[in-house]
Length: 419
Ligand code: EPU
Image (cartoon, rainbow, N blue to C red; front, side, top):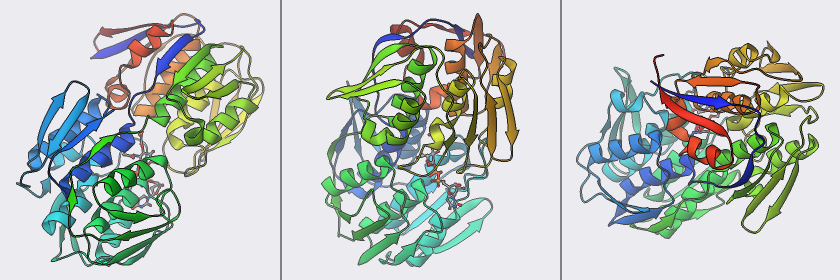
């Protein structure tokens, strides 16, 4: 199994270019189930989760052609309406085919994703929204079975904003009869990116990126030519990497508009961040100030950067409290950071972190994507060698991570090794 071997202590310097956003590319690729004709996408990142959704789309009948930096996708015919357990279990976002399949074929059978390392992650809100739109939804032997003659527009109010739930309902509503009004929708930039793509395909969507969305169903959608937005979580990870190493880096395609809360918190901690036309300049000195952080739906501090920020706080001056409000079990990284010398206590949904003057390299592993990223960041700042194992988690959601860090001067190498 591959490992990352990192020798810490090098301040990062130079430039890094952010890849396409995983969490925008996933629903955008799923949306091709709705289109007649070929779509050509650019900026689709090359990583594990994207390979998984492509595999699922091919299973459902897509032909996918890679053309240098572009990906062409076409469904001449949808051959199957089922997403099997084997595919869904490795990636929860496979649930994103549910809405499109139901809208296009009138039926879908998608394995329930089940829980994962960061929490239970229910999909009840998506299912009840589809029921409101006229679908008959049953759970049979671990599968969601949904059927409908024709989806009908409806008024839907989510109990809590859900990102993939909003995306599923939005996609289903584009081909429904009549108008769908979605209240308490999630506002993440990836939702706006999907809405932009659907609108280019002929959909009628208002209010994407706000809590109230209106989708007017249309008869059909056509293929698009679309470039996926840059990955704000990758950009945020590099911002924190710059900060934790006392570095000076330029993050090409980083946008503070998508990372307002992160920019604000890092500035409060003493990191210099300047926005330029092409990206973000991040400059930091060693010994930053501790800050408290609380995750929240967009535009709040993203849960997908909580673990990385916690790694930074382990080396800050003073105490900080990091509160996770989105997922109930997103503290996989904590025990491993403690093995590197961090002083962290978990209290309910909070990490109470007392900054220490140094971390020391160790053999560590995490059991989720962002937790693994936080260990890489800690390794970059630690004294000596850190070995991060189980990096298939990182490979699911970061493109060429070690190459990008190495170009910034980090001493990082991928090796094959035993568990
Ligand atoms: N929730 C419900 N019922 C539902 C759906 C969600 O109670 O039916 C709750 C969840 O338990 C959670 C909250 O709502 O407390 C938000 O969950 P959400 O549904 O928004 O999460 P998601 O759509 O499954 C996406 C991202 C995650 C990211 C979250 C939050 C994709 C493919 N995944 O997940 O990304 O953490 O939104 O922003 O877009 C990652 O990239 O590492 C990742 C986990």
